[in-house]
Image 1: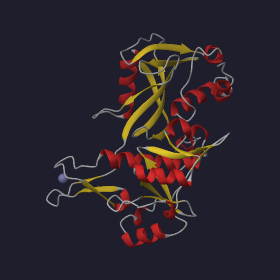
Image 2: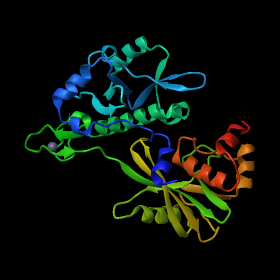
Image 3: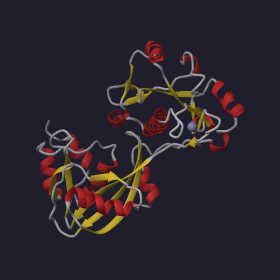
Image 4: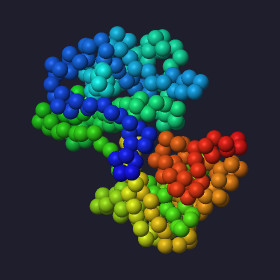
Length: 321
Ligand SMILES: [Zn+2]
């Protein structure tokens, strides 16, 4: 399997929208697209997505123009793209608009996408994650970082320009690159418990890439900082957009020199697991893993299957609660 195929297995990557890049700066095309009855809007309220929770699945709720009262004239909707049937836009909603939406959709709630996406169709989880990432960037860059004047959206939401004509500084969507790595040594893998996590949760090591580093440099530094483990072999596996709030996760496997691992202020416990000890720890509810939508879980699940452990998601479902 090549890297593209691997990455496409990760949650939030299944957005097969034509992003209509060449249309973003064509105001007439955008106006006609916005007015089309089939066009749908992804509403975001305080970075939360509108979802309806069914018995077995979670459904993304999209709005038509008619269901959107008083659209914002200053910060217009952001063009996401076309899925072959219709155009999609992201739109920020105010508290008043939110109340109107709840009248139209009494069973829907504005919810944090991270956990809710576990039971969502991949295409829609991807569209909502893409919308959330742009929304976060727009709201965190409401003012120019140079002169402090308000920024205005341009290019159908994919560019911002300072409203001070003398400055006119442009900004583009920002993503923070981060590395995430499953460290292995022979038949065992290393998981850590972060000081900020609830008890029992163990996961792969991760951290942000710093200026002046390659992705691999960041893997070497983070693993040593967090667990004092030296690596011998680093292999890139796949990547995932992770809009919680604004990361691009780059996933790696790395082989350790030995199983001497330590702790740090951030990672307060590290443990080596074989397939057998991990299975037992999960079933006995001694260890809890990150949600299956995360690349952390995907890296671990692939390692688990390749070492004869079977389906890790199935094992987690059988965990004693
Ligand atoms: Zn400015």
